[in-house]
Image (cartoon, rainbow, N blue to C red; front, side):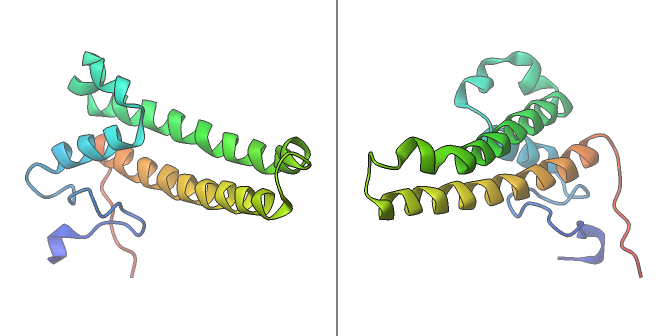
Length: 124
């Protein structure tokens, strides 16, 4: 990566640096991968990447909340229905998914800022 292609820590690997040609196209493709496939049917999301970024941020935030809710309730709801090792596996899955979504949320914030014209300047 050249000096002109620097991106902030946490920038998604799937998205080209904002200085690169077609970077917005890579950002849009990545953002659409984060949301339900039906979102592709909305013209406003295809034409306005900053709007898509907002939708993606809300969708990811909802997923984070769902993972947290699942962690809080999985023992009570599944205990007695499935073996204890299955409950533990479900807890681990909620934990992994929650962490993945938190990372994705941070990445969406970075891409959204770049789509709005914000430029990252590394600190010395």
